[in-house]
Length: 277
Image (cartoon, rainbow, N blue to C red; front, top):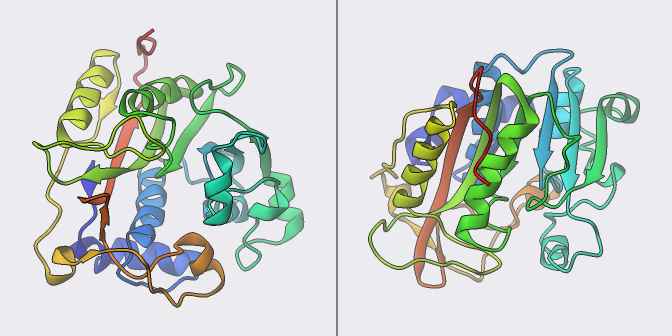
């Protein structure tokens, strides 16, 4: 489990996955998130024909299309359209109301996509019991949106119930690099801190799951020191614009806090205890 840094963007693994997704390698944390999800899924042995994956808050991300092209069966989820939380996400191209809206045509044809991908509505605060037995699940910067830090952390624990034993959960989140000061909580977008992630890891281990090692180093390269502020001055087009909607950066200022992305990888234990009540 780690924070994004410039060294990752310059790495072979990010370059590989950007190539697979047919997008350029640029200094943007969204590229890192895409690569992080796919690398962890690959390392967990779940990126294979016939595997079953579950995505939360998928929006327009290219992950379901890429997986479908490789014969992975995907259930992609988003909030019901009547939920008022979708309003801002729709404006920012982060919400897909239907299956067709979510297909990345440059990665997969319509027939293959519809054969391997299904779309359903799901509130991350109330995951349906029938979403179970998956080989992997993932979310990209979605778990800061359920309404509070506690709800986001609870989502990670509850999402483990959707996996078979040995299944892999991969999530990215908004990370406040200041671990000691205040942060944003009980809001539409919250910022997690090191103490929250460490406490979550302890609970997951106590439930019998395997948690990847924690690395909170956010890098020291010049691009790691750049903190972008709104208004964003991006000039991206097409899929990149849908995926990012912002100028190139690895860290951003959010209401006076410096935030970046942090990735979590959790493997479900063979005899894992249930998530906390």
